[in-house]
Image (cartoon, rainbow, N blue to C red; front, top):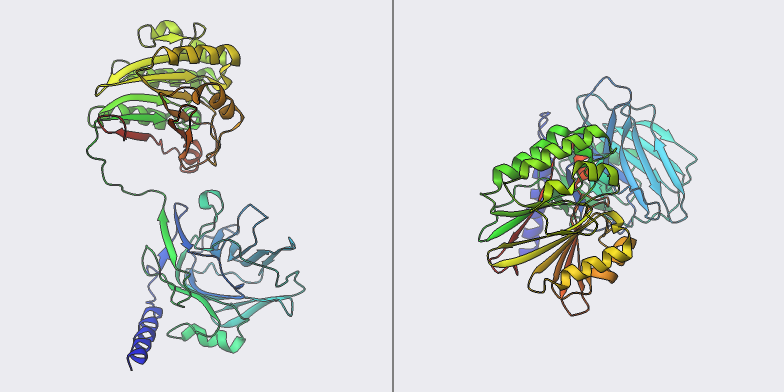
Length: 481
């Protein structure tokens, strides 16, 4: 009796959740900065997708609807399958199978840009080599002669309301109320019944969701394809119990070139928060300009020099920064007493020392490719060797890849400098593509752990119209945490 009662309660809950109000504000709206990702890949290929969706009629024939369910990525080595809406409100199915057969099925006779809630069903029939599109339970279009096989294996977890492409550019432009996926080819009678059903049919049901609010969603089929909600921007609790902090400014090239007001905002924030954040030092990762123009260099010089007398800082030369432009903008004469030494009488390769909370730090700044390599490496090793009681931070422009592995220059710097000294604790770099901060731990020749970071928010800045991201590192009083 207990098992039967549990089943009845579960079915009652499912039925209650599936009945959704008809208000246009119901369901969930999507944006590029939010993802709903299934916890695992499908064990079977979804052949039928049903969803209740609302897409606004923008009046634009090229208006993109976006992904309803899918795992399409730019990597063709991954089997993928996506159900969505293309331009002009045309529903679309795309897939790529183990034989690298790519198929894009667009239902050109159907337009669901209606400003009304619509029950959309998309069906793949691998036996008849057909695809069907139903709107509110009525068959609207069939596409035949498909290059489709049962070799499709959905290798990677699928998303709802988006897909794993970079920056989630194909997110759904409307609202979704519920989604159900089936491993069989649903019949016309079953689909018509599903439109008014109080719960999804459990026969061959792979996954089902009710989207009534933002957040994680339980797979109502019981198969464990739960949705994990992730937002790019989150409100984090303030960091407490720290003695001091460093601010790291990644590549600012897009800000300098296209969003100068955001570049100003970056330095405004640093200046306004030096005391409240207990900021001891600011470190720049290079590519200060994008096109190396006089106008860009003038902007950079103005903003960087605003830190003079406010907080100690460093910067490095990047590959978008010509050496001539870099040296003209930042002559060594402007930094007498601010840098402790230089390799060749310019600011391309320098070192600085400072103390905070009783800890001594040495910052060694190496320009892009730090040429000439042999003499710069010799110089840097001598500088570090003369400061055995300092914790050493090496900054350079290019070191880690976007996947968090050392690139060619990174391997050279690691082999010739960073791995040699027991007091090297950190390497900071930018240059590589990637919204995420990358961290690589490596053990030096003397058994010390070196934390190597790639911090480069420039593509996030470009995508979201100049966000001006600053990475903050917070330290305990002894500098060990």
